[in-house]
Image 1 (spheres, helix red, strand yellow):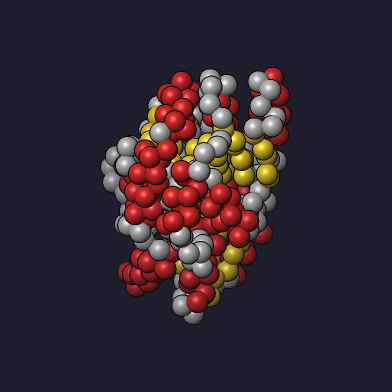
Image 2 (cartoon, one colour; image 1 turned 120 degrees about the vertical axis):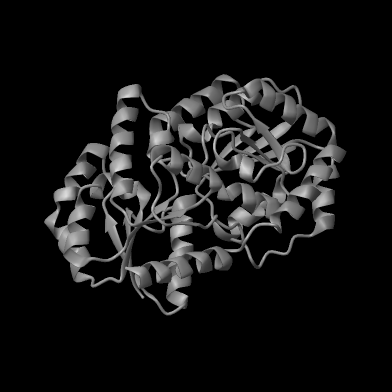
Length: 362
């Protein structure tokens, strides 16, 4: 198959959505498919609307002689009008890969109305959908009550450290050794990920703790600065460490050296890092908003709190610091949970079969 993948920016960008894209591209190429990555520069929403009239983009897609085009749904402002012309010109399936729906992010009422109108029109312009979670699929039905085109559900995997052997005895030693509660926060430092909720919770803790923040700092610089000021004001500089972006073996070592992961996002469309953490026996604390509930089972492999509930988070962290046997029980069940998830090869195989079928039916 000759497959196109339309994205914003660099496919090597550190985020769950781009990781999903990289894993899919690698799998398809290993199966002998030709995959052409077509990248648009990342700009503001209004400037992206002009891409619909970009003759060079139109020509690049047409000249690629593709059998099928996959569009990361984040590019929807750039193609919600262009897709109609593409279908007329080359008559191939156009499939959207939906990691996150902009319509369900927190926006002002007038922005939300506009975003939803454009996103809905975009979704009507495609012939198929690849969806990353049951939560996202439910939201798609909300946006398009009249029905969806043929869809494919392929949840992200968490087997990003296949060479790491998790030692049960090491987990037990890590958990039961007296000392500070070591909390890991993995994600790009943006407001939606809820770092401010964690910091507010830390201000309420009488117990000893240490927090490591692993993630890009350049996406929302004003928010990062606000967090740094909040940490300084609470005199937490020695207990909260910003590592910047971490990946590969260095990230695996962070998972191995911490007791639990906390990511109280205002919304997650899935949450690959929740699954990653469980490979290392880390219980995870997320929120009831979004798809975290598809991964986290309260009292079994972690906990869910209401978004913005720093008080509830502080209570949980205090309990886990004081009751290490409870933490060990959660750690063991987190590790067991990890083995229930699909691997990337399984998820990508579902997508490839779907793409082949979509081409055959065109």
